[in-house]
Length: 162
Ligand SMILES: [Fe+2]
Ligand SMILES: [Fe+2]
View 1 (cartoon, protein in one colour):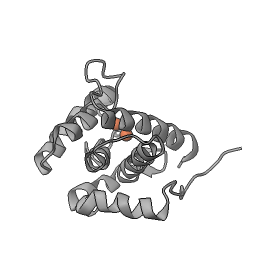
View 2 (cartoon, rainbow, N blue to C red):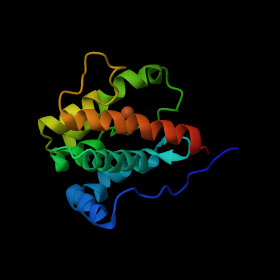
View 3 (tube, rainbow, N blue to C red):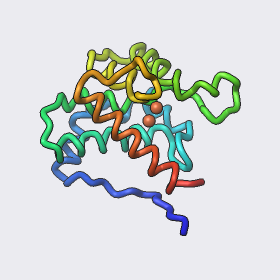
View 4 (cartoon, rainbow, N blue to C red):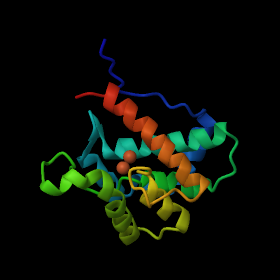
């Protein structure tokens, strides 16, 4: 049986949802970030929806695990973790190394557009670990996003087909 998950419901309570939106501030509506809607990430899910889901999942995990984290940096770093702004399915030869290279492309783009702190920079740069062996999550926030990204990517790849 093929499952379709089109509108995955949020696991956040309504209070948490408003806190989550507050932490993102205007970033979720920033025209540069909204540009990620142009590109497909996995299956039928665009990169913007993927990044927002990873941010929400990271926030949800931190709350359920009662972790003391910098929540603003957590959700903002997660929102920007795949801010590489190209279609990785376009068949260009350089896409063969997309899995290894896109965190640094996303980080360079994010650094150019926003004023990032060290937590946000580590979240973006290390989110593909252990694939990127030497770019390791060095804070709790980066570990959470690394885990949330893998969970969301798996669900999107398996259940959100075009
Ligand atoms: Fe990624
Ligand atoms: Fe991702």
